Amino acid sequence: MNRFLISIWLVFLLPIMVVAQVKLPAIFADNMVLQQSQAITVWGTGTVNDLIHVKFGGNEHQFKVDTLGRWLGHLPAMTAGGPYTMEISTKDSSIVFQHVMIGEVWLVSGQSNMEFGLAGSENAEQEIAASDFPDIRFFQVKQGMSDELETEVTGNWQSSNPMQAPSFSAVAYFFAKKLHQQKNVPVGIIQAAWGGTAIEPWIGKDAIRAYDNLPSIEPVPVKQNVSLLYEAYLKQVDQFEHAQDGLKQGVVNKNFDDSKWRQVKFPLSISAIFTTETDLYIPGCYLWFRNKIKLADKKNDLSLHLEQLEGQFEIYFNGVKLDTEQFLPSKKLSIPKNLLAKGENTIAIRIRSLWANGILGNNAESLYFIQNGKRIALPDTWVCNPAIEPKYPDLPRERNNQGVLFNAMIVPLIPYSIKGVLWYQGEANTWKPEDYNFLFPMLINDWRIRWKQGYFPFLFVQLANFAGNELAAADDKWAVLREAQRNALNLPNTGMAVAIDVGDSKDIHPRNKKTVGERLYATAQFIAYQDQQAAYSGPIYKSMERQGSNIILSFNYTMGGLKYKGERLTGFTIAGEDGVFKGANAVIVGDQVKVYSDEVTNPIHVRYGWSADPECNLYNQRDLPASPFRTAL
Image (cartoon, rainbow, N blue to C red; front, side, top):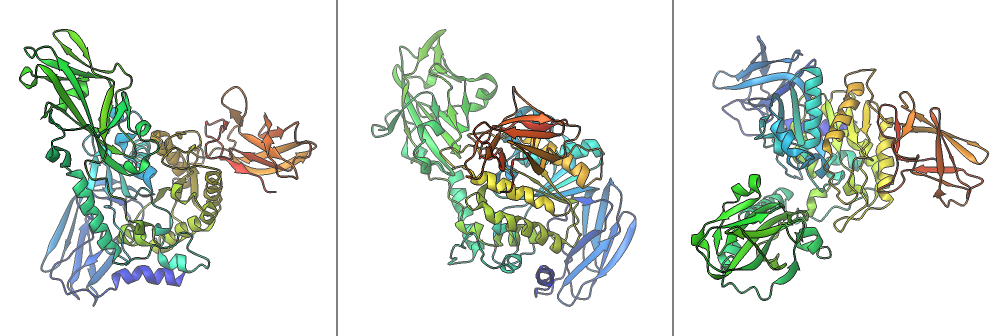
């Protein structure tokens, strides 16, 4: 433990040049939210031996800059409220932060399902339109990686509104919204998440090195500083975002030679077209589509009607870019007659596809033109080329090295006062799920030790159901990792939101984030806010008893009793001494479940929901699903 404590304080002891002005990390800024009911930690840099004066909440506090140019202090706890002004000054300089609120502050982290933005969630249009909550504020940590303990992150505090909320973590937004409405307090969310990342880079290197037989992920040999690798990656991203190769090659023009392009049939679903060629669009690419339309005359305007178009897109007609703003509300585009040609005309469409998204039309009749009230159909065969523009760059593999995300995205936030942590991660560790049994508790303990706020609440999402698709495999290892997540409940002040019933069999990024966020809030009600009446957990397996050819299962958190949804209780399998599992019958008897099978007369073992994408439907009376489990052999 001493090694852990020493390592975080090294951040504050690194030699620096003498500075003339007081400075605080970027997490301290206008619109920030500070944690209520506990000491508020502030820190920064300044001139050696200067006195730092902090005026806040009607009080003034004084701290001294040490011989290495660092200072740190604690302000007394305050109750929720605001807005306040915080002024930090020395004899030579001062900083003023405006619109500061006191409320509930949560750090949210993990991989893509935590990063997944509100704009992609279910009912996004309605949720975004109703997202005007000035006292819900997000600080989104810019992604980065480092071999060394960093002292600064990039980001700023943004209030929730229809302009800003689409990029917020959807899970965190729905959690914050529920917390704000139920507790009537400001809510601050510090979002530090990165899609596709394993758990190892989020754990401090000192913590990992304290264990033998690690790492489970072998570090990628680093030929240069990982920060430089990340900078190179960002430049490649910028090149992708500003790609204009297609226009430079003239692919939108009528006379462009597309004879060697691939022929595809309409409607055009990106994932369907390139099912066996995933390297074309992982993690993303631009796809150009072209087709021809013949017009008898060019005397009258033309309108393009398209019932479905998903993804970012550009549409060109005879080389001229159409105004697609009008498409969104009307599902049609007007094409003035001055763009038309008698005879053959060309339509070209560029779709920006990330992770195989992008759909052009939902059936063969969904794209057509109208001129003079007459419908004009396009040939159902298009030509396509996904290799005109540069691909979206692959993330540096080094981002999964031990500690590199912790160093760059978590350490600079310590010791900002927080209520607790929300965590949604695990998909990237399903290849070796057994290791999660020690890696996950290691992360929880490591973060708690370094924050020095005791056993702050650590709430997490158990992996949702997912059957796998052309982009990602899924098998029983997902069940093993869910078990490892559930085992983390043995740590104090931890809570788990089960998501086994709200996933998407074919999409590793299910869109139902509202249910997940609200289940996390229900968990927080009990764990963090001591509401003993909160329905915060579905049934958790407790014990089993054999009665003849039956096995009787007992559960914690039945909360008024068990029930199932559907025609019958499903999801159970049973095995005897041979370890061969058979489909089982299951019935609810009071607060217990009786499991049996005519094929297994001497049962000793039961599994429930034990697959990547199980059909299981056991709930408690508060409509919370049971966590998948297996009994011990």
